[in-house]
Image (tube, rainbow, N blue to C red; front, side):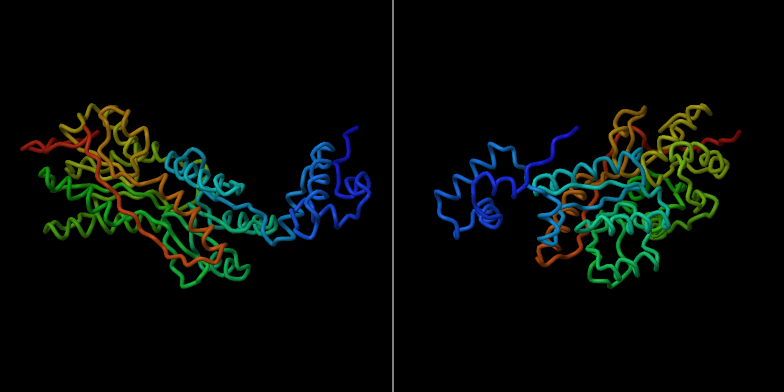
Length: 350
């Protein structure tokens, strides 16, 4: 049989004082004489007393817990973001509840309701879909919320965001390919991360237009919008590339590095030399981008910093300090997967 935890009343009985005297002594109250305070604290330590963190947090209207939502534990981008959140949370003695949304708006609403019942102090979401019902519910329960890479399309004062500039990242990627001499540049995107995909696709289209190049619809492939918990970006990239090859594209800009890895695999299967016959650019700069062959030219997102700033922003909100949403810059990282196109573009096919 497990032993009952030592309570304040146990200490009071052993010390021959009242419950309130022990409580004040354990909280270093000046109302208790120093010698009595020291004796009670020493007795509590000898008896093995451990404060009830839940009771303390409820009394103070704070639980020192934060709900963190990510799309998937298999996403290498999310892993670095979580690490950034965790490091700041740990430094401020705050615990995290981690939950997975699989990019499903209904699932994310369920998670929000669970966090609300658990009395978390606030929520950080790296996979928010930001539908109307989502915004309305957050406003109803007054849950302080910080979004990562999902800029809030709402004026709700409790929704704040920390983002990396998707549009400008796409611009850098396409300008890099244009500078190498590419004029037929494909785009491979995703349908289940609508906002970030929309911003990256807009950056792609606008940069080509600014260079006097009309975007050909056949250069673009985007995965279906259905929410699939078993979705695999690598497999999607591998499956989407063949449809682009007959269009004569000499380069492909991918929504993320995992899509780009799938493209590299498809090229290897078909005997297409990268970058000699097809240049490939990814997005995120996850660890694998450095280790694939050829190493991947990509857009570096400050993943760790995004997590750190989101957690600090939430702490500032909870402390009543002024907070402003932030957009961080991305950087182009040039590696081996991009080069100037051949003078006579290769014709690819099955």
